[in-house]
Image (cartoon, rainbow, N blue to C red; front, top):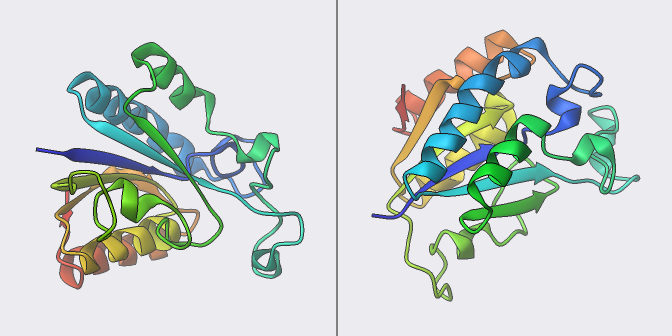
Length: 183
């Protein structure tokens, strides 16, 4: 069985106290997420880290403060997760740089998960998701998986948003509308 843990946008600009769009909720999720990455790698599963990645003139900056600009400290994966990858080795780790809410938009994620017709990889059997922001990038990536009929488990303790109300709404939508397992 091919199981993949997708860790959405756990980057300095979203998590570190000095991050442009960081939140306390994101920082509180770090120990759980770190544990999930450790567990996945230890049991032989794959881990995909999505990295929000923007050019300096990205149109998204009309909606949000400039963040995760390619090549900056803010765009980097948080140190707590880099250390887990270093501990276990990176052969089962894949990075997806994205510049939209969905990790599928103009990336190699569909091919990597074996979901595209031209993929040479075995199709993923199950996906687990953690990361930020629940109501934005986590939600739209989960929605794309649901549209491809992939069984998805979202860990409540492992997702967070700067908007608590939107966080809870998105969790409810993932469970009731998308039919995902939210635990």
